[in-house]
Image (cartoon, rainbow, N blue to C red; front, top):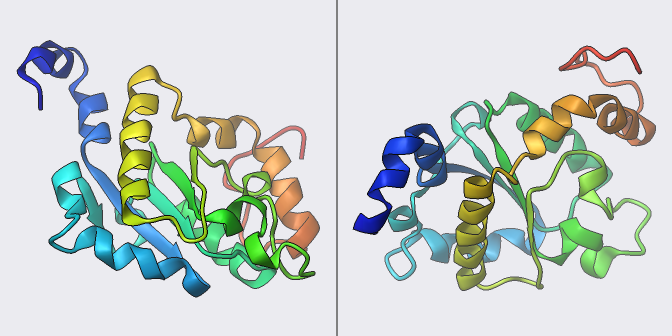
Length: 184
């Protein structure tokens, strides 16, 4: 931490804690997992950036979705996202969550993940290198500082939109709505 930014820490310690303590939940499908282990090993050492892998959604505030998203995997992605405590941030890793990647023309591929859960950032590429994860994390820090990493707030405000899209593709969901909405 830069000593010149000590005043920033004292003004908003909660924001600084969120920014430099990202507990990451990785949702990995297909080839998406291949670049994650290098980020947490000694060469890249994600923990020095405050990115710590965790085992369950209840412990996480950073959701990293890697690889393609199929209709079958969309349900656990939504459930995992909804189980995370706020504030929470979501990053789509690789081309597949953005536009389907090389599976773009498959009937079973979700092409725009941001229609089902809010995405705070994207890391493009097939597969993005470990350096890209750190570029994304530092960009996420900037968004948190500026108050622009607010996907979880948008999810609450526009829950009816997300829930409607989720039920269009998955049918009636077996869990009750997370937020009450007059528009549902």
